[in-house]
Length: 324
Image (cartoon, rainbow, N blue to C red; front, side, top):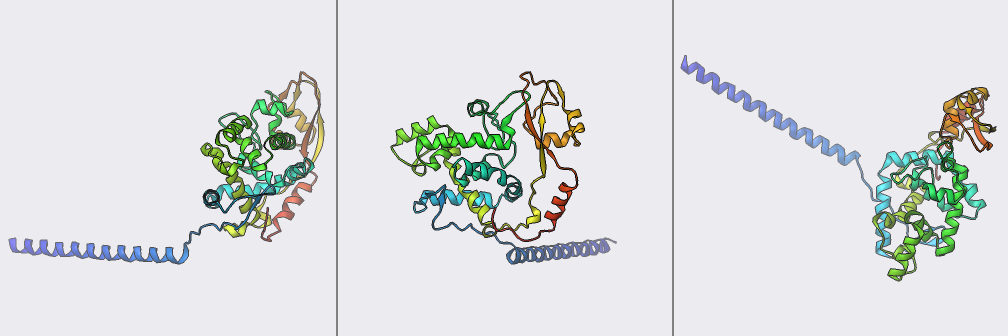
C-alpha cells in the first residue's frame, strides 16, 4: 500500500513537472509570437525637422542646437498625442475660416491662428487663472481690448469679437518688441515680464532668452502645430475631408429688450435653447436682464434643410486632406 502511494506521488510529480514544462514552453512561444508581431507591425518614428522654417515671416534659427531640440521636443509631444491633435484638425476646419480673414483684415500674420490652437485647442476653455475663450483672455485684458465680461454676457467666448481683440493685443505687443515671436511669448507671460528679461539678459530675440518653462516652450508649441497641421501626412495623420467638422449654416437675429426669456426667444425663432447657447457661447444666462438695454446679434442655425444638406455633402467627401 505504501509502495503504491509512493508511485502515485512520483507519477503526480512527473505530471506537474510536465504541465510546468508545457506552460513554460507555451509562454515562451507566446512571447516570441508577440515580439515578432510587434517587430512586424509596430513602428515609432522620430519626427522630421525641416532644414529651414519661418514663423510669421521671421526665420527660425534652427542652426542653433537648443532651438532645434526644443522644436523636436514639441513635435514629438504633439505628433504622438493623437487624440488631442486629431481634434485640432477637426475643429480647425470649422473655425479657421472665421479666424483667418479677421487676422488678414488686421494685418496680423496668418501663423497666429496656431497660437489660438495651443491656447485653447479651439474651444471656449477656462484656465485655472480664469482666462477664457479661444484666445484665453483674462477679464481685465478682455475689457482693455473691448470685450464685455459680466454675469450675463462674456464676449471672450465670441470667436469673432475675441479674435478682433486678440489682433489688437498682438499688434500692440509687436509694436513694443518689433518681433512676432517675442509678441507671441509676451502674449503668454505678459509684456512687462518679457521686457524685464530682455533687459536683464541683454539679448535681442526670443530664441536666445532663458524663460520660465511654459514660455520657453510656448513659441515652439506654435511652430510644432504649424508644421503638423500644414503637413499632416508627414507626421502620420491621414484624415479625409468627411472626418472634419463642417461650418454650420447660420443667419443672424437681433436680441434686444430687458428680462428676455431665452427659452422662449429660442422657440419663437424656430430653434432650441441648446442650439442658441451652442452657437452663441458668449451668452451666460437663461434670462437676459440687460439693464443697459443693449442690442445683440445672435447666430441661429438655418433649419430649412440647409444644415442637413451641408452635413450630408461633407460626409461624401472622402478625399484625404493635405493641409489645414
